[in-house]
Length: 237
Image (cartoon, rainbow, N blue to C red; front, side, top):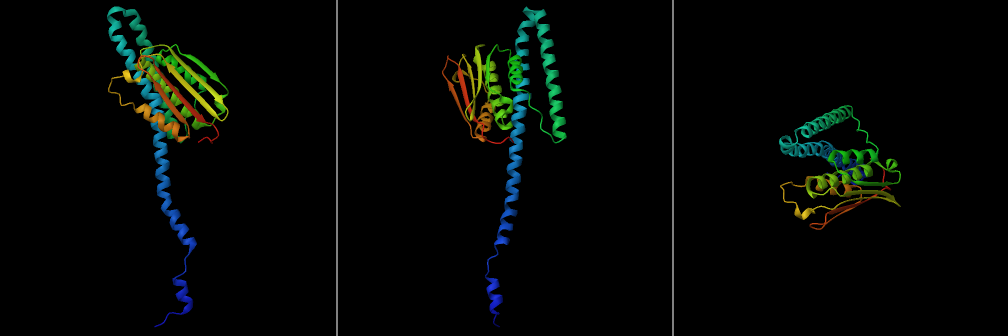
């Protein structure tokens, strides 16, 4: 039996709309997975910058107190009160983050100068801080990356450098935000603990996600310098 010419031509005809629809359906799972990965990474960074750093700071304080209790009991009691207040403050922040997350909203970022001041106080580092330009008008993704650079660099300086000589310089340049954190401590090569340096990996991920660059310079006995250049032309997430 022969097939009518019209029907035969229909069998071999390519339907562009059907192909486009099929391609769109196939791309949906990949898009959803990408968005979920981005959100998981974001919250991993948020937890690391906040809760992880706070707990680490408290542990360092308690380690110091073990020796101070026997030699300087009054100062030890005062330090314990400070640690207790810091932990209570962190609990309030955790509850706020959980509330925001449950409500489907992102937590508001503090002013950049406030953020840096709180970090310096947390780690008890008399850091020299210089901030140039109106940072709080920058895209959210850029500020998050800058937060991460400063937080991780100060945490590493407090935990590993053995020096209180730390400086933080943040400046808006044409088309970019430059963040530089320097300490005069032992240097990364002198660190021999078992820390997997998860924070440094997150830091590189965060900076590269927005098209920025980051360099970590370290010489044993001469400290560490972290330099990040973050483009400010993109849109806030």
